[in-house]
Image (cartoon, rainbow, N blue to C red; front, side, top):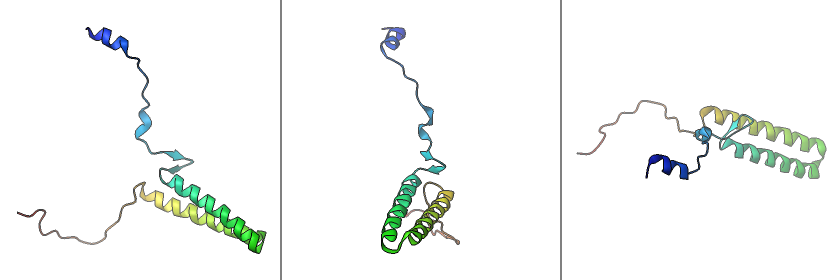
Length: 100
């Protein structure tokens, strides 16, 4: 068969070229979206528990502190990159790279 006949049998679809980019929502990337959702959920649950036990102002304080702590943690972790890497400081001497 000719190449033109083979190509006419298959339907072509446009390919989205942005698939290699990390998922992003409101400036939060990749796995930190889950961290943000957990921080917000934990802050709301903390607010409800503290509100029931101590009152509105204490619950509001817990809510604000939880949200600020979660946002700062996400901000500083995300600044290092999506894949947190262990940073070793110092001078390392390797005696040999492979055994003979």
